[in-house]
Amino acid sequence: MLAALDKDQGRRESAVEHLQQALALMPENDEANTNLGALLLEQGKIRDACAHFATALATNSRHHAAMTHLAWIKSTCAEDDLRDGPLALELAARASRTLDDQDPKQLLILAAAQAENGALPEAIRLAERAVTLAQARNLPDMTATGQFHLETYRAGRPLRFTSY
Image (tube, rainbow, N blue to C red; front, side):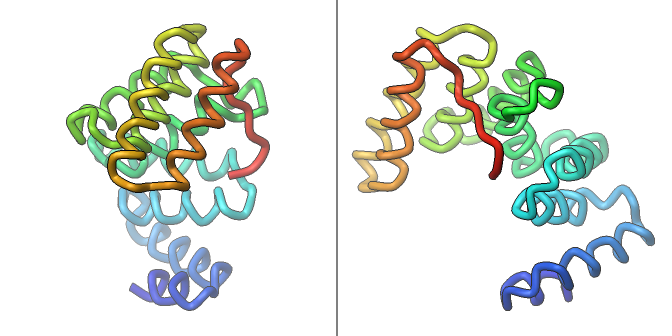
């Protein structure tokens, strides 16, 4: 609870400390691991974030946010040793299915996983669908993001990011 308050008030370091204290008492708390992973990801601590997302999924294999974050990193990380195409695809497909494959963000993550696995035509198809859904829902930022992803896939490249 304290971590959530700290995060809402912009005190990220304090939120991290509170989550670490909570995990010292309950190391398998999936929600605390996911929240800490998200904060660490914002700080650029990608490896540490991945470890917390993986712990959350080991405890609760259906934790949607942990699946989504880990699939995105495993699909798009610029660091070769952090990418894992098969794992990214499995997680992204599960996360997208939980939303009936109708969420533009989840479809873009699934497209990134397909691209990481060399399936660029499928990545393009999914990204086009995500853009169409985002436009229909009047989500201009998501539309622009999807169009950027499409340009990258059409150029024959998967996505790569150094920060999240």
